[in-house]
Image (cartoon, rainbow, N blue to C red; front, top):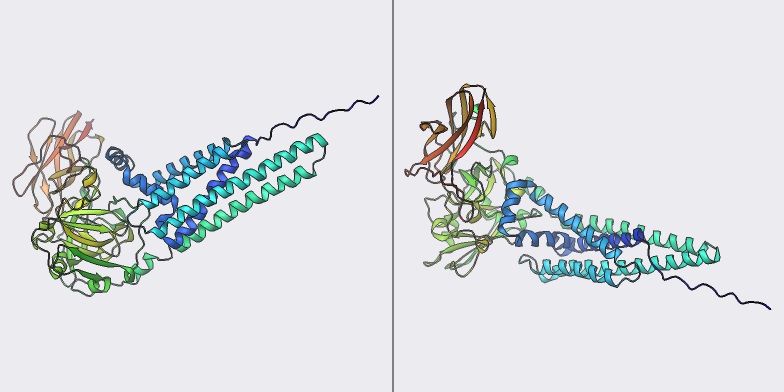
Length: 528
């Protein structure tokens, strides 16, 4: 009598952890690659990765923004990109690991990530509706690749289990090869898509356009610099900051690439005549050269977010006169090509004595791309967030309550004149020095008012006048130096400046928010 042997029940199909994780990562690569590819043709900043990073920049709390600027400086944007990439990778891995039996949980996570990209692009005021094709394409690509790879991988696991039962490995090997082929194809395709998108999105190369501008020759030149414009040999910064060292604070994750032939400036709103200027219109006007020091409102006491340059362009008031700004206009609402906005008091922009400029040159060459090429606004005496719009394309005259600029909506002040401040540049921090005569050097600024004197004191001793550099302009910083008698021991050196209106900067420390920091800068001298 024969006994029928029943086959053991088939174990539930379940992906291994490495395979499941790999599926999530490959789906992420496909989504980002396809999104970047489509963005190259519908708007480079519509790439989901860039759009989400820009959304984070635009909606981060002021405290986090301040911390990033203070701690990371110009590394804030690279760190943001790295951090976002890490978060996406972790989400992708989680999506795969939650889908070892069924793809449903992973599909939901992939959809949510894709939807975040769509929302980030939709929220951008500088992107049109057609730009939504990029994140939508990324979402679809991520879902399709995740679902298909999951199906192929489960088929492979089923074949592997069958091979184990039947002791045959042909089906298992074929399934493994199919999964590997699909995976390699996804990686290769994603890479090619990303490269094509990058090339297409940056084909409008601003550097080539900048090089074609040629020499910019001013009709009105700035006065020659005196020999004692700075004390760089004694430890102060150079009077003119090289373009590569000029501080850069903006919200642009990707520097806008605008060719001169594609750029224009529209002046509209509360004006008699709406006018539009091309780059050629500005380039062919008599150009004026002016030295102006720019300062960031988020600069802490003693901070580095201040630089000085020779700017070349046209008087802004001449352009505004052509439009005929109407009485009652309260702000000049400037918009950059990347959507950033800036509100400048209209009376300042219209003041012919202020020296506001539409600048197209910087330190003897066309504006660097990262500093606003083809054109930017430069207004002396106001912090940059209300006066220094880079890549400017629109100036709308309106009321304060009609439009709210980027930083005003985040708690910063409406009026933002630069405060009288000073800084010790050398020695720095906690400095070891030789007891006796110790030289200190630094910088003071009170743009559009001018510095009258700088004083330094050791500990609680008397204030002593420092030697000032020649005044080049009331709109530029001044350098100073002094020698102090420093006895052995640890001491604190303080600096303060007095402007030409007679105001002496206060000792009281005030946070940069909402309208700029105040307080005396100091260094510790450890004399031995």
